[in-house]
Length: 372
Image (cartoon, rainbow, N blue to C red; front, top):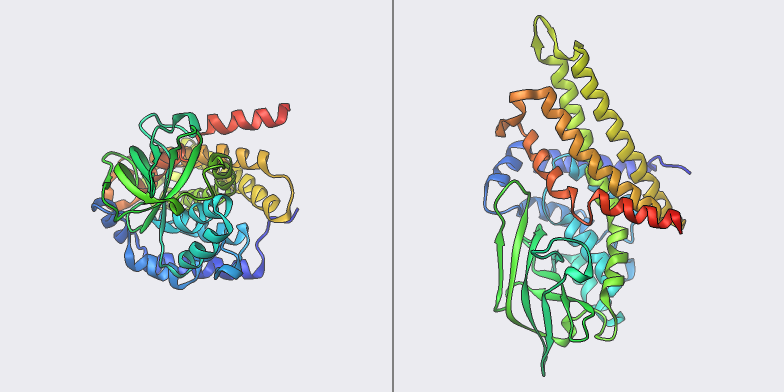
């Protein structure tokens, strides 16, 4: 099992890091975090021009046909920002959802537009009763003469700013779950940024939204939840790679601070308790990195990967959370100053901790696999 990067992936890593450092400076990310939007249009345009919006789209649909590991390289560098926005929601989870749930005609019609940037995807699954279980979906899609009428509320939908369409889970008349592609410009669609210590989360309200029959991915006779679950599983290691990149950046900044911040005549990194925090960060970072890389390798090599995905998600979510905690212990008051930038990662680590399932959920699923 070779978990090292190829030469082309090293080049991709360098190109992505240069783009992040140029287009997503700390100051611009802090300003974006303080604004009413989490969408940086110029930065997304650069990502689009680089072809990363179509990384996972097969070449015959106009995409790059890249591997999961290739996409993870980009995600890992974006995580160093942390760069909010549309790469994961549109280019990763959105694309995989269409690939898993869409019909052949829908793939032919939608994926080239996603690759070109004509369509930018978001995804809305969770509701007021938060969780990643189809039983918690209450948004209704009632069949009409011309299509469907959707009513319901979605909460904690990430990175909907800048999207043109949202993939939305709704319950059909037969109680199965369908995935609908909804134009956000339709009457009855309302998207509002949620307040609080969360990064880029929105409330999406649907009130008597009329959509055509072809807006339902697949067909009414297929329960989309199983296909959505497959898409989520494939997307998780790339989300984990984002967290690995974030952990790396937080660790590097904290290590540098511990070597330059002088107290009692010596750098604080000389103190045992500070060293303890640094070591904890290294342990969490390495655990997240190698469990994520193993899951990616298994996916690209055709090896059964379900158990590794659940392991990676549980470890990476906890790692990002705890690395930020340790960073604040080392930085003390400096770490909570908005202009320093650490709180960007702290907020993102809390936001992504439960996204696509918290560590408890994935440990349970891992246990189910190991005991079967």
